[in-house]
Image 1: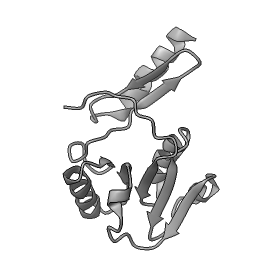
Image 2: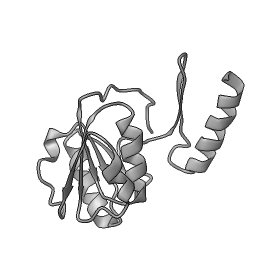
Image 3: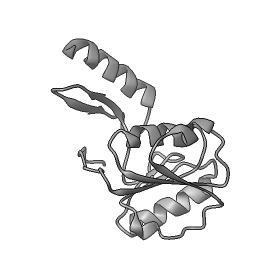
Image 4: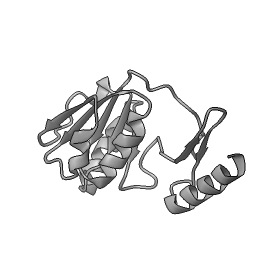
Length: 145
């Protein structure tokens, strides 16, 4: 069971492994909070990743190097086995990890975020259906305009 919490990731080292559409969405979300993001991918398939400012892109096959230096890791490859290995290592070493190919094998989830000057609200569907989270977030947005 996940405990909802907000954490400060400004200037903290975050790693995203993967270069596709989901990796792009995760990087975009993270980048709003000014962390030190490194992206490692054999190939950057989603070109919009290269347009994001202030990220370090390393185009090579991920080999598990230096995971312990990161506060948060996002396993966002299209290789489920690799994502599982990354998640297991991070969990065993008390590193926050979001695994895009599992609803269970992770210790950090992303949710639908709503922010304005007065509120920061996160809606989570326990990893079951992110569309439901986004729909509820949008309903809340209409209420607190």
